[in-house]
Length: 213
Image 1: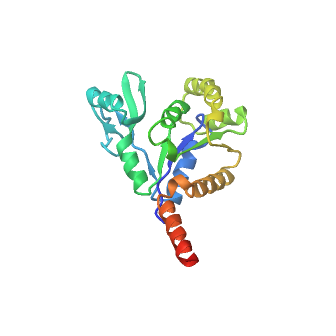
Image 2: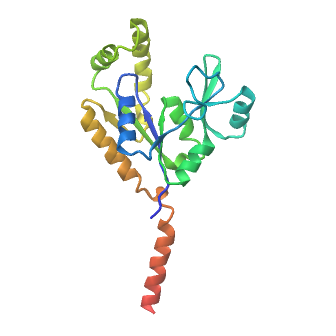
Image 3: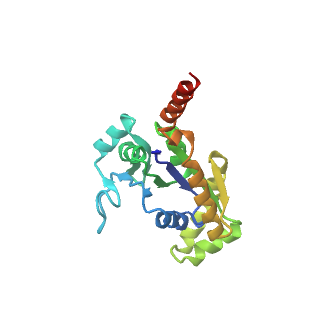
């Protein structure tokens, strides 16, 4: 049967392994695509419209928000960022899953959107705060000041774990990834994801009634 796609939300504090898991998912299933966010900031060198971001002016962005056509949005450092609904809806109706790497605030907005019936939300926790700090330091991407800020923000992010459908403790990346795949494979079989299920049941009912007569 044809299925609808899932709108998969992955959230976690920085350093818990969310981005690594997301890229593993992309390798596991090449049909799965990252949601391309819209922004009102200017493109940076090397960025491609439609691939890195969907670049638009303030008026166009605000119009999508006012018309209810933005799944989630936020104002960050003087610019708007958000997720247009139309390309996500098209992907879902075509049976393709769309992956969102967003925080709990964006997740809350999407879970209240027109596509809420197709949302699968997963929160990734670190095994300990000490391990979270170690991972941030070991990846060598941030200054000590930035790491301190990320650690200060981490508890606020973790405190929203209960708003997600699933919660995974990433103490072993390989094990966590296997659990993540299991969740997605099962959720793809939800009734809401199978538009052909009701016509199939009606056909079975018709066959049953004809056989009974």
